[in-house]
Image (tube, rainbow, N blue to C red; front, side):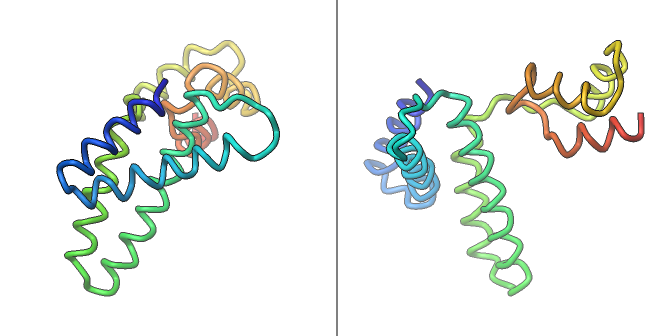
Length: 138
């Protein structure tokens, strides 16, 4: 499972005294534990872990933006290292061109159908905001 790979990478980062890498990996592991023990009894899948990573990545972007606005470039650079550590576990995201080709090949180009198709087939591999934007303009 993906979480096992993340835990192994966290252990390696700890041994290497890499605080930046360890910080972001620890956040992902912590959020995984919260999800796994939330009492629903639902098994946490790799797709759930990918959603956690994407959410943490967006949070890091927002944090970096704050540091940049405050002129704290050293902290912004640390955020980049943290983000890089967790994004290594994400699948390659579809490019705008690839999304356009997929939408063009769909028989039903209505917004709900397009979004449902991408959610079912490319969940975690496509920025749904970008898909929505392209579908509206396509």
